[in-house]
Amino acid sequence: MNTAKTIKHSDAELVKDYINGSELALGKLINRHKLQIFNFINSKINDKDTSEDIFQDTFIKVIRTLKNGLYNEEGKFLPWIMRIAHNLVIDHFRKSNRIPTIKNNDEFDIFQFISDGTLNAEDILVEDQISKDIQNLIQELPEDQKEVLIMRLYRDMSFKEISENTRVSINTALGRMRYAIINLRKLISEHKIVLEA
Image (tube, rainbow, N blue to C red; front, side, top):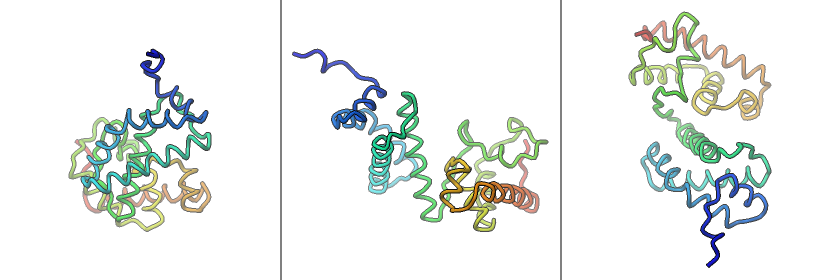
């Protein structure tokens, strides 16, 4: 028996092997992480068929990125692939014109974008209802501002990516984001949504 086959390769080694032409290495990566990734997607979508589609799309994007030599996560393969899955989940909701309810956590904090400097994020009481109210207010923004805000806050896209996706300059994208935040603050004030604890 060849003991080399029983050695567990790291994700980074398998990624390298796949880039060097080993389809087997990709199979190992998929098998290693498929349950965790699928469960994550399905926990957001709650529909097995749609979750399967998004799971497939996730790995299509992974394969494309690896084949194009654009992967440079320095061994952090799982967090990278989870980010891809997360973005595709948000894409799914965006296409169906529904913004998912995203609870405040370490990765996402809407209040850091709308704080005017006098509010400290740690002092803000975060409730599901507040998040829902704010998501409803986002729907009232002009379409171009809403689009940039959703891409930035919910899809975690850079302004470079936003400018490419919306076919406008980075300055225009930044301007739209700025006006979106100003208008969102006004709407919060008008609707008397209390953000402070």
